[in-house]
Amino acid sequence: MTTAFSERPEAAAATGELDLEDRHALRRVAGLSTELTDVTEVEYRELRLERVVLIGVWSDGSLADAENSLRELSRLAETAGSQVLEGLIQRRGKVDPATYVGAGKAAELAGIVTAAEADTVICDGELSPSQLRRLEGVVKVKVIDRTALILDIFAQHARSREGKAQVELAQLQYMLPRLRGWGESLSRQAGGRVAGGGGIGTRGPGETKIETDRRRIRTRISKLRGELSGMSTGRKVQRGRRRRNAVPSVVIAGYTNAGKSSLLNVLTGAGVLVEDALFATLDPAVRRARTPAGRPFTLTDTVGFVRHLPHQIVEAFRSTLEEAAEADLVMHVVDGSDADPQAQIAAVRGVLAEIGAGDVPEIVVINKTDEADPVVIKALRSREPGCVLVSAKTQTGLDELRAAIEGALPDRDRCVRAVVPYSRGDLVARAHAAGEVLAVEHGTDGTLLEARVPPELAAELEQFTVVSDFAHA
Image (tube, rainbow, N blue to C red):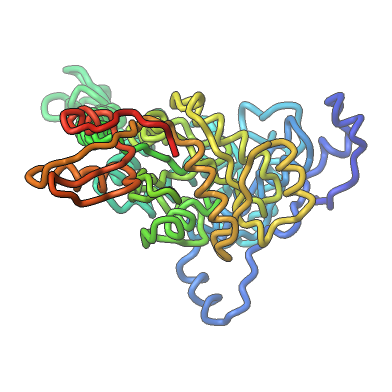
């Protein structure tokens, strides 16, 4: 029987002791049932959406952490197109190796699934093939885990050729160890004298159907990796071209739905997709911007992160995530209105470290301050000194953000003062495009140019230099 949440002393939780009541109860997480009020929406979802029950195991951390994780799973399920009926937590010392929640709780979960008329159970964790099979055998409906759910969302949102290839690779890597055959679908290996007198014409192909599927999947994985390697080469060429032009790069990283694309739009007028949904952006968008002083730089929007981001996703999207590892600056966007923004920060930094971007200079940007609790914002400012408070929705704090970006960009430009002949107007144009022009004056001998420009351009201007490397204004 399902029970309501009960208060639990922090001291007992800290020692890791499990109360008998905790172990024997499936805890219902309040506020997870998808509310449907519009009649047309109800009819639509009855036809199109799966009815799901969420189940999580609370084995470490606080009760609040477990609830927040399940609420996030609820948002993921709704983003994938499901109607959430129930959210339940089982308190255990560790995940059951057979059925995830234990035999008794699996049977109790089956009763809840039947009563709610659900057709899917989603587990808040990554399940082994045997756990999936055994839990499905008990609850009698489809069972998926958090990883499969995230992969499904990625598959729905992939638009570009590279994004689709990355998602397919991640799905195949997840599927490969979980293949299983049933009954007559397996073509058995057989010798010359098959049991039952089959004989000639009844020999198997030399491998079971599941082995054939595995071989095909491995072949497809190899082909996808080759395609993605070629795309990664093209991306490296583009990065190299920007490096040669000495244009600094800023990568926008952060938790999914933190408002990264919204900030990209208000800073550059990019017009990329903005949607109140998890993982709305999978394909990186690169846009050009300028600091308040006029210095050009690139802003790159990246895929959002999430707690327990599947390693298959990190591996498949590595070529895209390398943008962050090779950037001059990471603009780390945090949803200030989230229930636990500090956990978001930790999750994002964990992934950045995994892809080799942990040492890249970082600006923490607290977004959605118009919706955030002032007490939470105060706590964030104390934990993240130097963070910038903004709201992409109300466009407040953007001037402070631009100034922070300008101050954090590496100073690679050189200052020159040169008289450029009119026959070399291309050099003046390049100074405008790739540098910061401080002054221009037209004289009889040519154009007097004062500018901060990339080292390569400064070297070309040296033959016309009046005063080189003059003091910064």
